[in-house]
Image (cartoon, rainbow, N blue to C red; front, side):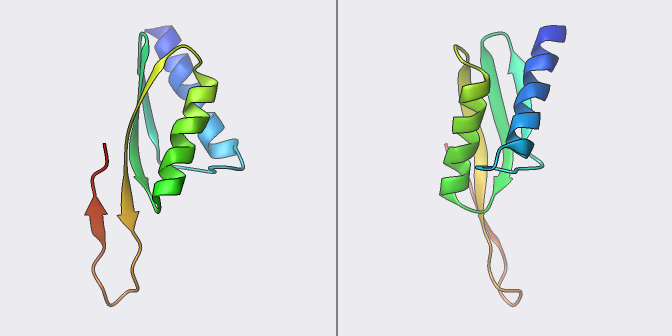
Length: 85
């Protein structure tokens, strides 16, 4: 739906441009009254900020935050991916 694509694009632009997030690579899908966020960030705080900014851009819509937190480790250690709900 054209309106869904507009909402998703608006949220993606806000996530990139908002000084609280500056997030690239967060995928946003809008479908009627639902917005789903997917991607990876470096901390739980950034994950919360992504949901906050998305919610501000889509008042009245349900935002599902499926963004995961990827722990950033020094090069000699493997990265661990944590799934968050």
